[in-house]
Image 1 (cartoon, one colour):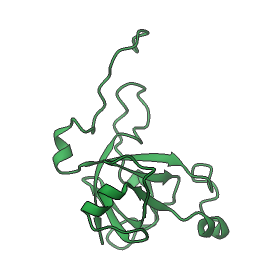
Image 2 (spheres, helix red, strand yellow):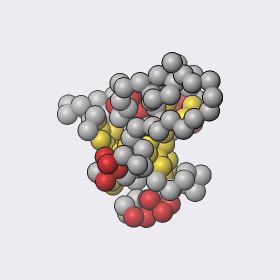
Image 3 (tube, rainbow, N blue to C red):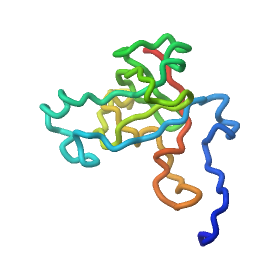
Length: 144
């Protein structure tokens, strides 16, 4: 039951989580302008116009030797994604983002090359809304 009065509900896989030592970046998903969730994810002209990239703050990118357009490895205990980086001050330090709805495109080792955020998210329901926890996932990022 959700309390009708506002109270603080701690999330999981946040900066307070001990797992943060191994995976120091908070992964968040956002709606992508060329797709409606995964619909239109196979339209080549839209994929060319709006490339799937991982957004990262310049400070976090600099610590990892990552530059705009570099191929990066985003990973945690659940999976691994290889995709290009977009270095942008629009991201807060400590947070990276992937557009949601990208199609899963695994290689022979099950490493996703399509930028599918679901590879990195948990099946555990979120603490407050009991829904999809697409904004409470810890990851690490390194240059490939």
